[in-house]
Length: 190
Image 1 (cartoon, rainbow, N blue to C red):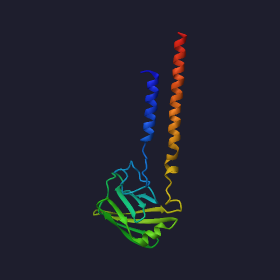
Image 2: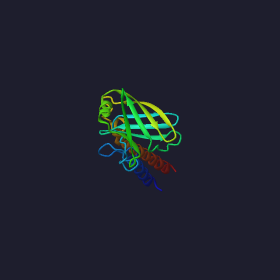
Image 3: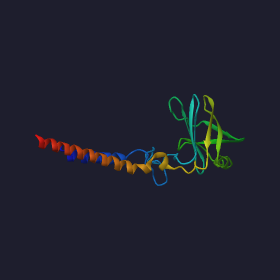
Image 4: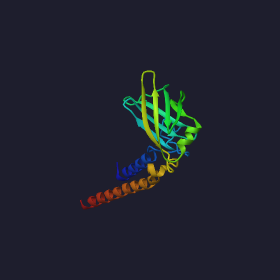
C-alpha cells in the first residue's frame, strides 16, 4: 500500500470514529446512544439522585411531570419490579407507582414535586418493600439553580470535539507528509 493511500485511510478512520463516538445528543438533549435510540425513560437533563444499600441500588431523575426511579439488585443489576416504594422528604410522604410499560417507579404527587423543584439539596428516604424483604435507602437530590439547566457541552466536552477531530486529522497529515518526505529523501540517496 503506498503512503498516500495509507494517509487517506487513516484520516478517514479518525474522522469516522470521532463522528460516531458515544454520547451523541438529539435536538431535545436526549442521549441517542441510550437503549431505544433516545426514547429511554430517563433523560440526563434535570436533577438526579443515586443511592444504594447492600441489597439495592436506586437512580432517580426529577423530570417536568414526575420523579422517575429505577431500582436494581445491587449485586446482579436485576431490576426490582412491582415492589412498594414510599418516599419521605421534610415531613412529606408519598408513594411511587410502578409502571409496567417502562419498568420504573414514578412519583406524580404535585405537592411533593413542587417541594423537590425548590432550589437546594433535598434529603430523601426511600422505603422499598418487595415480597421477600424491605430496605431503607437514603440519598440527596440537588435541585440547585444550575441543576435543571443541564449543560451538555461543558459536561461531555462536545463543543471541543470538532477541534479535536481537526487536530487529529492535521496531525496525521503532518506525520504522513514527514514520513513521505523522509522516504523520498532516503530513496534519492541510494
